[in-house]
Length: 469
Image (cartoon, rainbow, N blue to C red; front, side):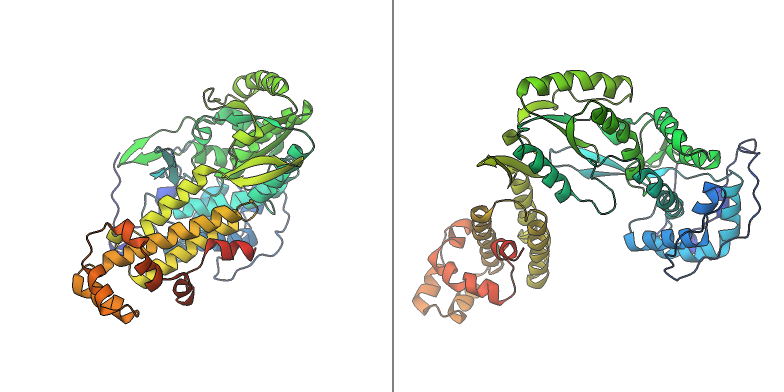
């Protein structure tokens, strides 16, 4: 099955028929007659009016308007039909009545997601599934209604993709456990979690809370919608495609079962999405915990645990959310994990590479974004000395790319002279055969491109951003 896409919306038909369920026998019993809500360009976030069944809450005017604005804010690329976010409102104005009726009749047919692979730090790729813009709207509307329902059930030790909770909250909880003596962890590694979720088990768990069969059926259709890879259709008999608004919630609902099993066994743990650590007071207790919880995860939830990467270790030797831990005077403290530092350096190398085509202004803007964002995330780590060394390294990268940009001898000579270097020295360094990295550390460039000059022209530093936290 092949899909053709065109960037020119004039030559692409966006048809409501594409979203109609072609199996006429499906969901015949669903027939609800209600007035069609009106889609507007107003960011309406009023409290959703409670109605008798869940589907009508999902399809309410307020909820759909809120979902529309969330999809618009998130932007993102289009799905397999090529529709872009800016085309969504005109489409809804023309087809809203038909779209809502197909949803009420149980005839809505989600389109396959578009496969996108993004690189991971280990050299492998993570598979994402990009839904169409219309499917994103419906998923977002479902998520907005289901989230408050399941929030009441979620564990206090779960932090990922939940309102008013963050990775920093998860790390603080880890520090609390370490400080009171839980110094060994089961570092649990689920094998390709989102790709291997057992859909039947997930639907069973959902059905225990959601009694509206129309909503369950609609979610099941999203799970079974399939994937388009290089124009070829692939079925999706298992997994929850990452990339849609509903995926994080469904992922949390599945692993909430594991959370409550751990609570029942009185374990201390912290989970952020599918990244989970169980804290124990001894290595022996941690090994025993791993042996006991594995049968539940694999035998009851039908998830796969990577036995090679799952480990029992002292807290000093684990990586969690980019951080590592250490104990100082009995207190659990945070460091930046070496892999996070390497990932940062790789990013800076790309920005300061001469072949990326960036100008001076663009490079400075990009670097400042990296510095500000990275420091904001790692602001809770003890890293003052590390950040000073990162500043020195980054400034050397800037000096090196600047020297490369002054490619010709005459250009180097003129720029060195303008910076107050004598003619003799300027000519000598303009003709040097030393490598770029050596010149970047030379006294001449340390003077011409000094730390004070970097600050004056607007470059941020890690240490300054860290001090201002």
